[in-house]
Length: 97
Image (cartoon, rainbow, N blue to C red; front, side, top):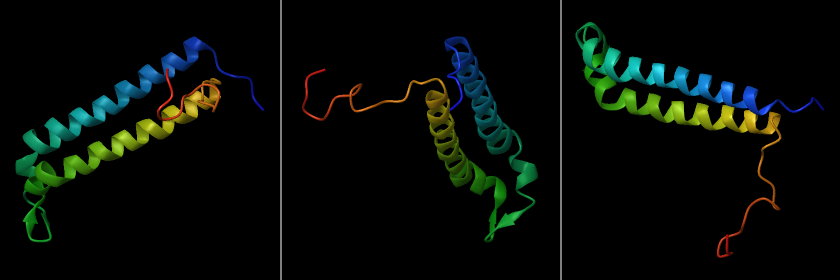
């Protein structure tokens, strides 16, 4: 088993991960759904202009995907740092904190 990463390495990775995902979010939310809508409308998806579809549905799918990516990669980083939750470190429903 590899040695756990340091506190500084963990948070540097978290900050990097958050910044990269926010950049993707901004590109999708503003770049594709607002500023790039005219270019995307030249393509149709099931008879609907892609720009309209991206603004209404596609960006939501991308946002959910970003949340999933964040959760999975953060869980891996927490395991690597030795910060994963155990039965001893969490409480069960109805227990006092």
